[in-house]
Image (cartoon, rainbow, N blue to C red; front, side, top):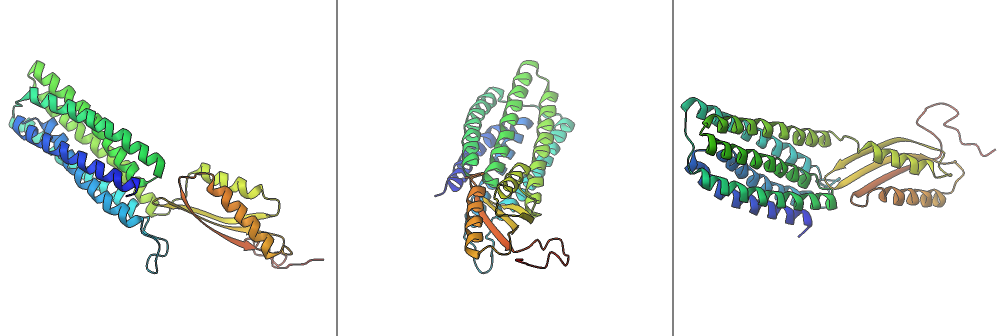
Length: 300
């Protein structure tokens, strides 16, 4: 099992455990804040399970149907995850407003506090683990999962503060305000997931720092006169690079090929975590600027 898959199994199991505990206490206590956290954990569980299948499919090799592989499934999963989080945030906001209107009262505050403290500790440990796997694999799905559970840490802290204040003051409006605030924060956090996923689906280029590094590597090769049509994009754990390199027209194919291999190896060293797919087109003249002189190859 790959580290990415293992991470989704761990996060799914943790979310299932937290869901069971929070739902029981949230329903029994009537606390909007605890119930909000419970509903969020339910979604965490389903999202983590979905992420497992997304990663499982994205890791399948390219074939006749999917010539470039299925890496973009991760980006699609990120968009779906962000959408689900947004819907959950809207539902929680509705619950907070409903409690404010009906004047419902929270109970079992002591048990709720204990549950939220345990939940906070477990979630922090999970975030640290997911961040470690994300750094190792550069997986968009795991990054999204880590960001999602990071928002849960802030959510749990907010719920704890709410429960403590309600316990000491008896003011139920605090629970409503905190529950509503959490829902808005959840909706806000989902925006980044959706945006990142859509940009990858639209073939956004890789980070400018990486692109600049590729350009510097190409320029450092003396036998390369210039280059054009440099294109980059990410798809899951894969990074695609396409570029046209311009050589002297009298260079042998073997020599040009060796230079190209050397450039590819240097590009891969820019980030060893990435699975690089590099396609280099070798030109005997600069055909990017179409003109009569550029089309001629003279050895005189």
